[in-house]
Length: 549
Image (cartoon, rainbow, N blue to C red; front, side, top):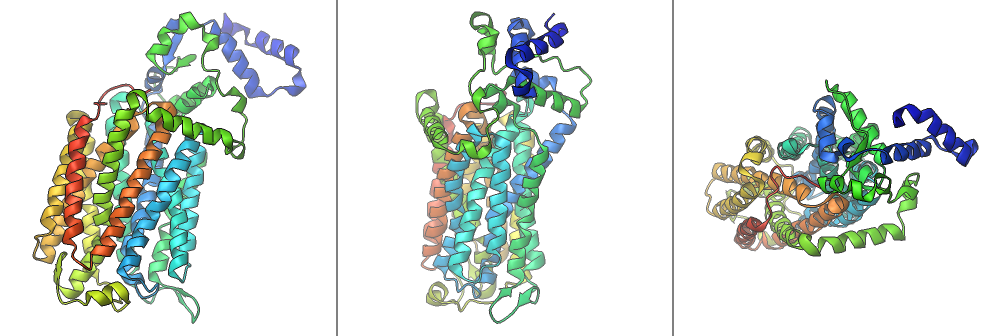
């Protein structure tokens, strides 16, 4: 009956409010709420049921490609500095300590950006925050390519890192909120593989561009040589991703959580239409969970999801205020109370140890490969080299040869089998099993890098470390997206990423300070922390095939 009275409802609204002061969306929202109040519990769908109604097809293919490209852009931005260090040594007058800070500074920015952008995504929405953070990432990186001095290059890489810190956690939050639970694990694993794609892209671009020393523009006061061109090319993925997100809808789960039920249903209808699902889309009323569905009769449909309606027409700049800060603090308090405190603390420990171990070593691989290629020896026992000169002057100049870039490319490519493995096995073996085992095995790999004797052995152990670590990162991505409820998910992932950046910062700085003393010290520290993080992860809850709320 309610469906047949839409014209009557619209006329009533015009009489009540006056035709001049109405907005179409507001009218339809009120009509929808009146219709919804007449619905019965049997006519109501939970969010998980509605997602299944949309089918699985073209929209999800486009979603994974776009979100994957954005993940790749973050990987390119994070890892690009490690490939330019050997070539930029003379141009920027870099010491080993400076190189440690250059590797670390992007993580400093990510630590700041993760907390800031994550909270905004829980109040403003996923899509708008993704567009802005990706833009900051790209512009910061592009401007850094023009820098002629170390301190300015460092500042601009920090700004770029702020953008990366926002896009990484929000991309996964946005992506997971379009996934049905039976495909969630494998699809998040698939999305995580795009980090490998970004790693391979960065390594391939470095190999293709940096060795050409004559490429670029040169004058007495300004140099724009091959490694700077490499940095500029690395910003294309982030800037193009930001532009393409204009075409994507907001997360329907975020809209529903904010009381914008009609907008959420419209978005799901568009997904259903894009997928060309053979069954009709029957959702007219929507709730977040079975618990809310069971409470409908006692509470009344018109009382559901009314929060935050006053902000429906707010612009992004109107939300960056005291209310946003308060939302951030409330979300943070929620994470450290009740049933969430245990998984929050455990995931903080895992993020710190895995980031310290992985980035503290992986970001130094190109520099270590370059030293071994020039001086012989092994990572922790190089050939004849003046360590004082290496740490305090710029005598180690010149562009690395192709073998160094080949090693970097192969180390990046070694992630491929690990990503295929996690896509297939994530839902079969479970997230905890993969995370715990991979971190412990990664620690063992790092320990044995200390004993290698040749360049080939070093390459094999480095590839093995990268491959096994990737399994851990993929499992951690899935767990982090599934453990927390919608209202705090982006904030939670932002905080997790923030502490992960602390680990990456300390790992790179400590490695930079100790690599010329004896790299066995940071190597053993990395091995111990990875093993410890793997053992702690056993205490996490099992989220395989469970509903997310």
